[in-house]
Length: 280
Image (cartoon, rainbow, N blue to C red; front, side, top):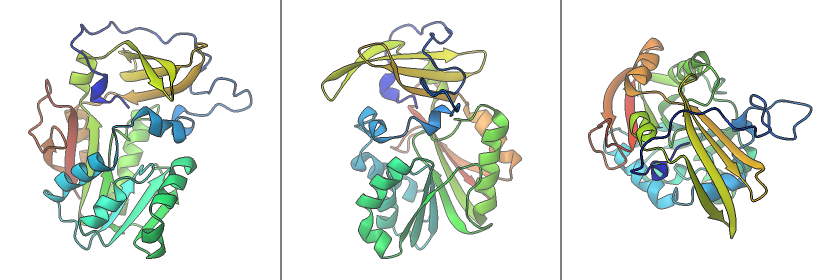
């Protein structure tokens, strides 16, 4: 959610309440009949425009780092919250026998189906629409679960996030591994860019970010030129020890913790990411 590129050397802004942006709770502006959570609305094609630097080259580097730490050859891998599937081809290139990609967004899965058509036809890839709190796979059915680019901490309660981890533990085979790639909360909060203007397709979009200390969530809003909310993001700011405790509760043991896709040692003040590897 909060890319390290959002950071600056400016003093951190004080926590502030969200502006009146027409989003009651998790409802989307203009959605009169049904309140939908932000993550059910924010991952369409425009999501790919928001993070143009998150491309195939970066995905290949991230998977290459993972392959240097975990056995991937002939493994069955679940890419949890796979989005448009940019990590799936690199996982196959590193020797994975089969990759299952699961995501809630039909729009992003459609992109993945287009890009991975040969692999789908060969039976090496399966793309599944679904909710990570109820993974539609059998118990002890995969060797590795990956969760790239802060695809965790979206739900309103810690209990729901724990439910995700319990599902990860359920589908992993004994001895299997789980890789969680999360933003480094201490650094991101300290260097948060409160407001900036981004240009997408030639159109300016104002972006606001803040840390809601009472809810311990990083909040983001993107507005169009008429100050209408276009996108919303809200992610719980877990720190490494909290992630460790949550995974331990569901039977996963942390075996390594890194600070970035380069495999560097984690440092709370300087690392862009928390990349934790757990074993069942």
